[in-house]
Length: 221
Image: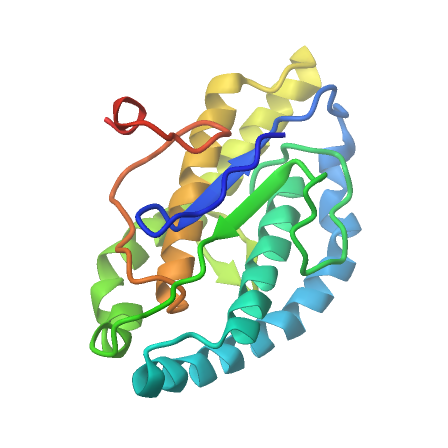
């Protein structure tokens, strides 16, 4: 799998590989299989919120996001993305997600956020609620609901289930649907990183589809 690290101008990088073959029917019971993850993520997202509040004051007074806190919140987002990718955020793999806050380079769903050396004291006061409101409206349609880091309803889950039903009858996960689902998840994760104060780079209103982040200006156009 290609590793694409985040950079200051493109701080959030979301990549995934569509596994083949996929089980035609496992998706019907994944909601049961991921219950242990949901339990752990419930507490992790409580901690994520507390850490974000502490980081808020750290940025406000020092212009820095404490590195250990940043790494923890990045780990929660990575864990959540892996669980979402396995379950109804994409249904793109049958490999059970690890119980890990680490990078897990062998797993088919990857997330990287570049650590910012400095963050704006002024933006930290408004970006997580005021500036992000337009994005909240958009991703609310994508997700339908967002509970403790896992996806519940909305366009993403509907498209994933459509892909799974197609897989059940044709043994193929439609590539066009996969690319669209990854684009929607990429948008959500960019907004999550911005709202969690992990970057000052405003998320683009752009659907970058496909499993791999676009790198060139041509790909972004």
